[in-house]
Amino acid sequence: MLVQDKNFRQNNLRFLRQLFFENRVLYLEHQMSSAYLNNPTMPGWTASVPAVIDQIFYLDALSNEPIKLVVDSGGGTTAAFMNLIDVMSVARSPIYTIGRGLVASAAVPILAAGELGHRLMFPNTVSMLHMPFGHLEGDADAIQAQAAEFNRIKNLYANTLVRLTGRSEAEIKSAMTGETYMTAKQSIDFGLADKLVTNLGEVFSL
Image (cartoon, rainbow, N blue to C red; front, side, top):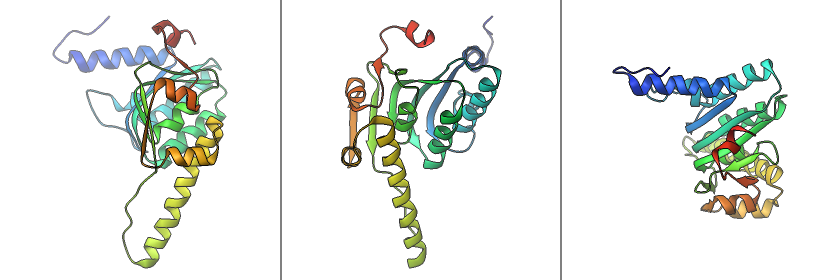
């Protein structure tokens, strides 16, 4: 039963997200980081990378039934997306991904890392690829070390997408030049997803 009081929005959002969780539907939203979110109107335990990882661990221990991960994020840190991809790759449960809204930057490999044939996008979802960026500062030695790490991250991001999409390294790095926006259909053609959502029943009957 939905709670109707002065905290209606907060309480009902928590209630609905709990129902989705119990039905093995998880959400990855906002900027991805390696920390829990702290937003009372959008409970961080349902949306942040550490929370999604914790939920996958728990659900995977309960059964090997598919887990559905809804991705609606503008990206985040390399550590966050690689941590999640590592967990997705070793979970016994297949992880089905659903792109919704904006799937950009570090969120793109998360969508692409879903179970092949079960990576969906809503028709008006937009994806965006670009070069990972960072700010270099310090003395010459520090800048040199930071530049080397930046290149490692860039290659890690590119190689991950090569593996997940089947595209060549040259194609991926070309798409990473500037900001490459793609419609859902273009994203599917590029190999980031497999098909469009045509009715909501598909999302919950994967």
